[in-house]
Amino acid sequence: MSSSSQEFFHYRDGMLFCEGLPLGSLAEKYGTPAYAYSQGTILHNFERLRETLAQLPALICYSVKANSHLRILNLLRQAGAGFDVVSGGELTRALRAGAAPDTVVFSGVGKTQDEIDAGLAAGILMFNVESAGELALIESRACALQKVGRISIRVNPDVEADTHPYISTGQMIHKFGVPKEEASELYRRAARSSHLKIQGVACHIGSQILDVEPFWKALDEILAIAGHLAAEGISLNVLDLGGGFGIPYGGESPLDLERLAQGLNERLRSSSMKLIVEPGRTLVGNAGVLMTRVLYVKRNHRKNFVVVDAGMNDLMRPSLYGSYHEIVPVQKHSKERIQADVVGPICESGDFFAHDRNLPSVDPGDLLAVLTAGAYGFVLSSNYNTRTRPAEILVNGAQAELIRAREKVEELMATEEPGTGQ
Ligand code: LLP
Image 1: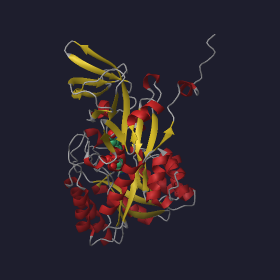
Image 2: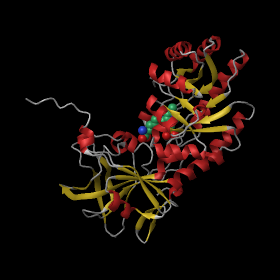
Image 3: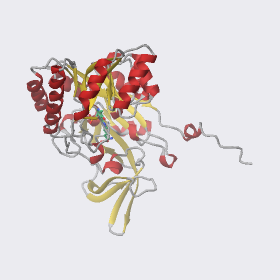
Image 4: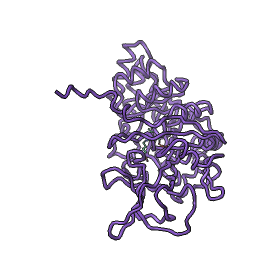
C-alpha cells in the first residue's frame, strides 16, 4: 500500500481496515462489489496540497471527473476547493455541492451551446477555451444573454508527458487546446470584444505524470506567451496549470509536490498571476478501494484464474489502460501463494484486474480489495452485461455511511420502452 494511504487503510490482526472500520464488516453489511472511501484520506490529501502550495496565491480546483460523488464534492468544497468541470452535468454537480461560481473553471474541447449558456448563467470564473470556434460561440452567447464571458485560452504547449498515450494531452497530435502559435491571435480577438473578459491562460498536459520536468516545459511556453501579450497591453491574471499529478499504484514514487511547488515559486515569483491547479487523482485516488468477493478459483490448462464478483464495468482502468492496481486480501489467512489472473464475470477476455499476479491463496467467499481505486473508478463504471453499478460507502473514523445504494436491475430498465410485443 502507498505510504500516504497507510494511516487510513491498514491491517489490524490480519484484517484490512478503512480508518476505524474493518472492511469485512462493511462488505457483510453493504454487499459486494462496493467502493469504500476514506474521508480522512481525502481531507489529508487536500490539506497536504494546500500546505505545499501555501507560498503561492493558489486556488485548488478539484477535477470533478476523477470522482464526482456529490458528497465528495461537498467535502472538498468545505475544505476550500474550487472545481474544474468538463460538462454541463459536472457544472450542475459542483453548483449542487455549493460551489461558489467564481471558483469554477470549465474545460473541455466540446462545450455545447447549452453548456456555455449554463456557465454564463452561473457566472463561472472562466471557460478554458480550446478553439477559435468555441471563443466565437461564447462571445455570441454572452452577447445574446447580455453577459460577459470570462475566458482563458487553453494552450497546447506541445510537450511530452511520459504517461499512457490515452491520458497524455499536451502535444500537437492531441485534440486539446490551441496551438501555442495561434493563442495570441485569439487573445487579441477576445481583447476587442465587449462580451469577453480575459482572465488568463490554461494548460493541462496529461494525467498520472510522475516527473516535474514536463510541467516546467509547459510553464516556460505559457510564460513566454504571457510575456508577449503583456508587451501588447493584454494582461493575464490567472495561470491555470491543469492537473495530472501522479500517484503510486504499485511502488512508484509520486510526483514530488514539494519540488513542484518550489519550482512554481521560483518561476512565478516575478509574476502577479494567480495560480490555479486542477488535481483529481492526487486528491482522491488512494482514498478508495473496490471490495470484491471471490466466486471461483479455477485452472485452465496452465493458468490459474481467481474469478471475482466485480468486473470491468465496475473498475475499467486495468482493461482500458492496462493499469496496475494492487490487490490484497481483506482478511489475511493464508501463507501460501498462487500466481493467477484476477478476472471478473463479464464475457470478454479484457475483463481483468490483474494478469499473472502473485497473491496469497484465496478460496471462494474470500474478500479482496483492489487498492487505489478512488479516482476514475466508479465514474467510469457502466451497466455492461446488465450489471448494476456498485454501492459506495464513505468511512469517517468509526462511522460508515452508504452514500450510493447499489443499483437495481429494475432501475436499469425503468426508462426503456419495451413495445407491446404482440
Ligand atoms: N484538468 C483537465 C483539463 C483534465 O483533462 C484532467 C484529466 C484533469 C484536470 C485531472 O487530471 P488528474 O489530476 O486527475 O490526473 N481516466 C484516466 C484519467 C483521465 C484524465 C482525464 N483528464 C485514468 O483512469 O487514468
